[in-house]
Image 1 (cartoon, rainbow over the protein chains, first blue to last red):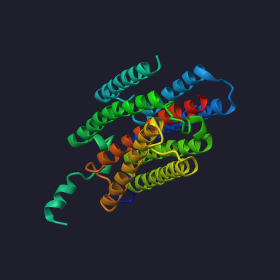
Image 2: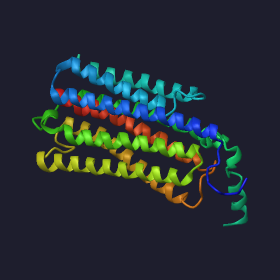
Image 3: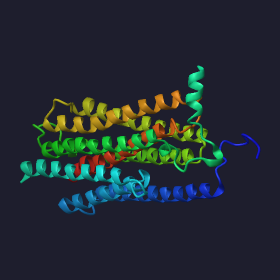
Image 4: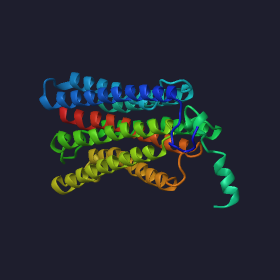
Length: 107
Length: 214
């Protein structure tokens, strides 16, 4: 094999695997863009109003964040147990904090 | 370059014929860095939760000043969202090229990520300047003002920190090439950058969109 012909002489199987993964990443990016456009369109067109719209917007945000965590940040992959525990633990505390601050002000 | 340094560096060189599947987690140091950034991101979640909670509690305390519906506009926020979301994808491309052991393309995509982040930051500075000059809406206007600038400004501060981090990372390693020593550093940055985008998703939803709904 000749030396230094190219910086990447990984075997073709590995490259194909990386490529397949990249395809999934692009699909999740397109989905995230779609969720964003839906969220902005719902507010811009005023098809819905009030509390139901706020709840729907929040659900769209959570779905988009999960795409980001699971695919872009690889939480769905093997060896991400501790990472998942940390971020989900953080989310549970975050929910408690926001709910308690919200409840004492708005209830 | 000293002799010692040469040895230190060659130990991290990647043999393209048996390159690790993920060069950022090929060494113990890389694994610790990966765990470390997730500990950091877990605590950042709690930090931002307290800021979001404060904002939600105070968003109607306008003290006669501008309200959320007076201030926010959809167009700029939509543009900022697209910029940051796209920069998240470009850093995925950078990591993709890292796994393919292609340093130049990784640097290129990291550079594009940085430019998109910079454009986002410019929009945010324009937005704040617009609120201050056209509405007289400052940190001291009301409890809503303090909560708004603290939450959104803290996120902007994270973007500034991320951009500085990226510039230093790219310049320091420009001549080094990719190895198992700096791959974890790039990967750590990419994770941080994605997290900034996650926080922005909640900012554009909870602050801007819900603020316009009322």
